[in-house]
Amino acid sequence: MRGKYLDIYCHWLSAGFEEKVSRMANIPLHIFQRARAIPIMTDLDMRFALMDSFPGYQQIPSMVSPPLETMGDPAITPELAKYANDLMAETAVRHPDYFPGFVAALPMNNPEAAVREAERAVKTLGARGVQIFTNVNGKPLDLPEFMPLYERMAKLDYPIWLHPARGFDFPDYAVEKTSKHEIWWSLGWPYETSAAILRLVFAGVLERWPKLKIITHHAGGMIPMMEGRLGSGMEVYGTRTPKHLKDTVNSTIKERPIEAIRRFYALAGLAVIFIVHGFFRYILPTGIRFFKNLLMITLFIMAFS
Image (cartoon, rainbow, N blue to C red; front, side, top):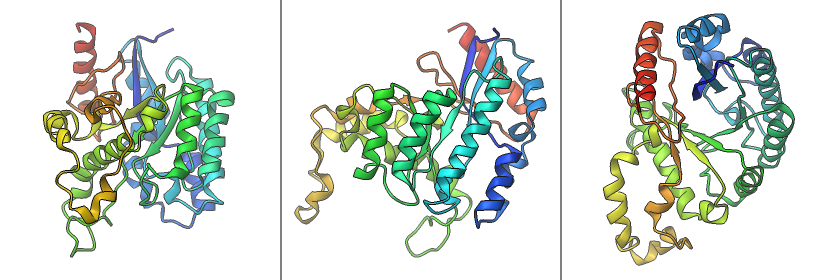
């Protein structure tokens, strides 16, 4: 067994899944353009050769962006999820020394099917958990329709991976129609993650299901660097809001918000090394040499930490 360092947040795109999407969904395939431009995101032989450079290094792969719910209506996405998860499970079974599991994709625009697929993936396919995104086609994650998924994952005692979702069609300012300068990604994704965390906190999700584990992408977004603001600022929660908007700050949580926030798992990306509970995470940048250098630094630090 080669396992010593477990990378639990790395993406993968199967050619088979891309073909399935092209047949079933009425969307342009440029959505996968960036993934195809990164060879080790799609070429397993190249990925395994790279991984062999680092003895003991393993990955738990998850599907690339965008979310399944953007690829079709609720009648289509459950089949896409099943196909994607079957592919990842088969790949993990064939290559257990490299992939000792995978993260299942879910059709979140069909909440009932998402719960069924989560259970199937964990119990039947050997998934290590499920991946959801910070919104579901614009819907917040604290809506009642998504609560059954959190309850089921808490009962299964398997984690939820939380990935940001925002595109160029989310403008930087209200008077504009599109985001400029890729701000939707550089600043929008960290904000998406942070906002989703707070909405789940104030909805009391972690109080209702204390065993639920949520693993956040990109080191928890903006939250780690804003702990002081969130800690002291939330002590006067609600005082900034006018009376006619008091329903926007309704919450039944009993613990301090900052304490609930600290129960999320934050995993690092790129040159930021933020090791939590013995796991770490890397995305696969464009340059293989760049990735190898960053991975080498991370593993070196983990070896002596």
